[in-house]
Image 1 (cartoon, helix red, strand yellow):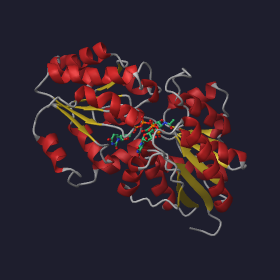
Image 2 (spheres, helix red, strand yellow; image 1 turned 135 degrees about the vertical axis):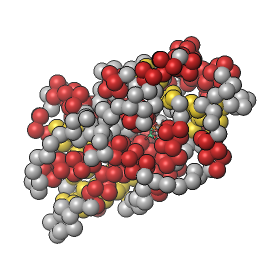
Image 3 (spheres, rainbow, N blue to C red; image 1 turned 30 degrees about the vertical axis):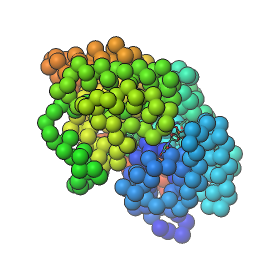
Image 4 (cartoon, rainbow, N blue to C red; image 1 turned 120 degrees about the horizontal axis):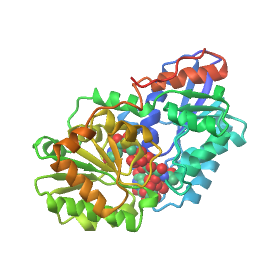
Length: 385
Ligand code: UD1
Ligand code: UDP
């Protein structure tokens, strides 16, 4: 690193942010123009630590904020306060935040209020519905107001920003760093953390990989998701449902009682990213309300049924690999059975598509940051193959 290196604090707090900033932190560390510092709020604990340890990231600051059943306001308030303290010590030139979590929004606002330039990674995603996903749609829009550089993963996301009046010169299309992470994970050769998982993934039964956690799905919708999984397991005893469930007790309490008596439903703790990507590759299809999984599964050629009413990721819908089924018990069951029983329906969705990235998003993000601070020139935007 040179004496005049640009100081960058990368602030994150949850599992998906960690997965998506890990390749960027590595790229910044490899670039002499930057001096990168990893700052975690600890909005998540075990699920965050799992990713940091896998990617061998040791944050310089850990605010250790997670509390069981934390409210949105408590995490936002404590994150603003904690990130502010770190900025007063570190005095970074740039603060990078990722996506749309409470951590991202709080850190972006805290940096803005201190006059520090905010770089928003994965900018421009929109559903157009302020209530869904909640509160993420609001967090994204708020971040777009305080950011100086908007790193849009796709041309569609960039268009959303331009339509809202963001200066085109502040928007760069990089691809999504989640694909960089996924390609890194595909090169890891290691046994699963749990030998039973390796056995399950190789025993030859069709696997449905399922995850659920969204706040707007908590309550009746989460119960409907649990019941749908039970219906599928009962209807198809030849199939295994692998359900690595989020640690949120609200999610676990709604889903586990509905499936725990079923022999062909394997409920596990959240899997390490290494194991989860292996499970995605082994699965026949994926049921999820996750954002990141919607981006990863298409590049592995896996059909995804999204248990939400809308998505901010329309590219995979257009590519035909993703379908919205809502948190609707009957629809989840019907669409899953159709994919299991109708080879033509399955083949229509199981094509490999890479609308979200080519593995070079972090490099483009670093280039755009260099351009912003005057140490680099403009590079070409990401265009899907
Ligand atoms: C958060 C993000 C959401 C993201 C999700 C990724 C917000 C508003 N939401 O939602 O956008 O999709 O992370 O998973 O920022 N918990 C643990 N251990 C952990 C993590 C969570 O016990 O490692 C439990 C705690 O009781 C915690 C609860 O889960 O209070 C909820 O965590 P929180 O970060 O508030 O919300 P998520 O639903 O995880
Ligand atoms: N993931 C993981 N282990 C799991 C479930 C998911 O590593 O048990 C990864 C997944 O590959 C994706 C990310 O976590 O990259 C998605 O996180 P999550 O669904 O919690 O949040 P979202 O993407 O919806 O914000």
